[in-house]
Image (cartoon, rainbow, N blue to C red; front, top):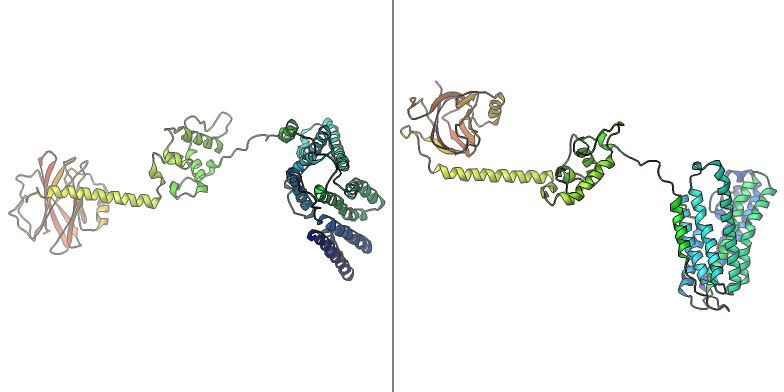
Length: 559
């Protein structure tokens, strides 16, 4: 009983709202309140050009019809007998379709059309299955006409008309008329089947038959009035859709009324026909004239490419195209063919996916990781590291190598001896230089800028000692091995001692920091000076054995 009360309440509320809106329109001398309440959208400009009282009278009549519609639609089902599963689903779908027609939801035309087709097709199929006292042949015809009139009109509507010759236009028009006739035949067959079934009342069938009079009444009334009254009348006659809403709602309500007919005969779904209805839209969809190709890699800025781990996921494909489109990444892609066309993004991506699937060794992993990281990082997990992680990793590796060199140098230091024990001084230190590829070590004032200035000059000399300003470079005759380096700082110049040494050379250095520094592979020492100033550096060097050398560096004030 609650649903019956809800229907009456909705009808009363709607009618009261319509009457109030009409009164407000009369007071304000505007059609907007009454038209919006009744039609649920604002009036067009033609409404103001017609008789205001006539339009308000029409709106009052349309509001009364809609109130009656609410009363009919919101009535509850009879609830006499429990429904079978198919009838229950038919009722649910009918209620959904009624709600779709009753509540105006703004949807794009394509979406609304697809929704109506998807919703109406199962309704007509279930209709054919729940009807009683109708044989399989009758229900099969019912189903065929319903599917033809439901599925094919949208297909014809979306077909491109400009692709057909003029002689095919009459054919399409004839097909459209035939489909309209099929829809009309389906509706007449439904009314006949409802009468045979016995579950639906005469009122329901009469309301259904009233739908057939909607179009003729609309055409006749619009012909009786001129423009712009005909445009306003056309909008008001939209209210006649209530007959369809009420018929659908009452059909759903009365599905559970007791009937006198026997149970319906088994009806199998015509699968070939259903398959034809599904495949028909696919068959008429026209392909693209040509595939849409892009060439974004040609205009991409590849000057600064971030590491894979530092690249946002949405930019990784763009980075891949930038790297792969350099013209020589793939050997079997011609970047310029005879027609002057360059390779497309799609070709590069396709080649990349193929390389990902095949594990092509010709492809650089640093590029392919942006396309399929899960494949590349199986063998190259370091490509997943960020720039910060790589920097930290390299710093750890350098620290490890320095420690290895220091440990190796410490092993040799214990075997080094003072090459000039008679030359005593309190400022003395011994270290070990471990050359690789004949690299030497530096003697400087502790300022890295002095070493950089010396290296930038690129002085070429046969002397083992090359000095400029506050830095000197000590060469070596060893490719690999160990050289014991002894540094002695004196207050006065010592005598020149050449016996037992391969080379003895002098050079001037400006040591303004008050300390003399030695740095090289394995060497990192500093010795204090008596004072800052200009000093003389005397280098003694000799080779003791294969891979073993000895240097003596004597530092004293320049005269």
